Structures are given as structure tokens and as C-alpha cells.
Length: 341
Image (cartoon, rainbow, N blue to C red; front, side):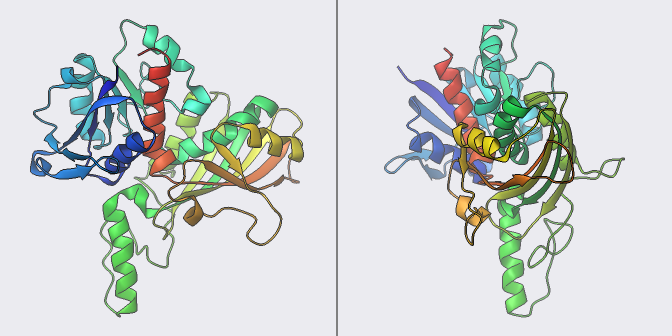
């Protein structure tokens, strides 16, 4: 017997990716409901190669009809509807930041801390809400997990180079339109971003906090601690770059134990969800363009950091719409199935 599944925010970039990922991975779903705003109700969305779904109104949906709901509809929508779905008995997997730091909501990357779900499923008082981490956090902790297990990571310094799809379809449209405007000599009109994104980089993602960091940078710090180890210190600098899909990160780690470059490379090669492509030659690394449409977190440019004891440097890239959002959500659903939901 299969599961009844709903995707809330199904008409958005991540929502459509969730539907595609469910179909591609042959998730055991008897029925799939595509949910969106009332204005989108009645639209047709593809599910797999030969099936169409009619969009239903999220406002009027009876969550008692489903076992699992994947939310990708924004924080305010999740805050309103996710508790309703959970109270109706559905297990919610939310892609927004609304519940990530709630103490009674697990924050899950299956390859890293999927075992947390055993205790959650055994809790009769659970809220039936599971949070999907921030896209930049997901790929980083996936790469950090095997290194932490082997060498005890104590400090992480990371600079991110995040694609415009992290800001949704409107961000992608803005990059396209601004690029076109430059070639036809039209004035640029920043709307989604604070400055021009075409042929530029913007060292600012999300709102500024009182300490000068942005909320995106704060998320990487607190989410890494919650998912991997509260003892790990993280400092991040997040940058928006003119790339359509795929986030990149330059990661510098300091470990408690002596770290060997070859042993680190081998630990990463053996890790679930990680692919190492690391050749010290032209084209011997992965770029965000090459990660688009792929499931893995790719790690390249692995080398010792000569400036500190027990230090390592590496480059990692991943498709932020897939592993950074839709795929990780579907993998959480798969973990729930494996663990007896």
C-alpha cells in the first residue's frame, strides 16, 4: 500500500522540483495532490512523464486525506497551514525557515542526522512537523559529516557563492532580464535584489542583523550546530552571484584531531550523497553549472590549510533546487517510510 502525498506551493520553482523528484525516485505514492493559492487552482502540472495533476486550493484542502505534505510555500504560509496539517495527522516536511530552530521540530539532512527521526516517530506528542534546512547549510553539512566523524571538526569558515534561483523564479527572471538589458543598452531595474545582479556579485543575502551579519549567514551557523554538533563554531559570508542554478562554497575547517589530506579525501569518497572530483589539473573540479540537475554534493580542490594546525580547505557545489530543497525534502519522506511511518 502506498502513501497519499501533497505538495504545497506546487506551482513554484521548488514545488515543481518536488513533484518531479517524487516521480523520478518512484516514491510509493497512491495519490499526489498539487496545492497552491486559490488563484492557481485548476492549473495543470506534470507529474512524471505521462501524468498531469490539477492544482487544488491550499486554503480549502482537507489534510486528513494525506499522510505526508511537502511544503514549499514560504514561511508565512507554513506558519498558518503546517500546524493544521500536523494536527490533522499528516506529517509535514517544511522547506521554509519557519520551524527550523524550534526545539521540538527536527532539522534533518538524511545522510547526516536521519537517525533523529526514530525518536521523533516514537513521540506520541510530536507536532508532525519536520524542517528542511537552508540550502547552503544542507550541502555544507553533507560534506562536513564524514570529516567530523573522522577528525572532529571544531571550526568552519565558509564563503558562499549562491545562485539567483535561491531567491525563486523572480530572482532568475531578474538575472535574465538584466543581462538582456545590458546587451540592448537598456537601463537596469533592480527589484528582487538590492543591486544589479547581472555581471555583478552582491555580498548580501537576506536581511542584516544587529551584529552586521545577515540572516542567511546566521542560518548557516545555528543550523549547522543543530544538525551536526553544537560545539562546532561557524562563521559565514554569503554572496549572491549571477548564476542561475547551483550554490558553491569555499570551506575552511579546523579539526581537533590531526587531519590527513588523503584520509580526508577517502572519507568524503565513502560518504553517502558526496561525490569527489578532485584532480589538480584544468577541469579537475566541479562548477555550479555542472551540478545543475544532479543530486549529489560535489567536493573538489581538497588540500591542507598550511596556516593552522589540523586545517583543511575544500570547494563544494550542489544544485540548490534539488539537494538544497526538493530532493532533501523527498529524502526525508523516504526516511520516514523506511523508519515505519
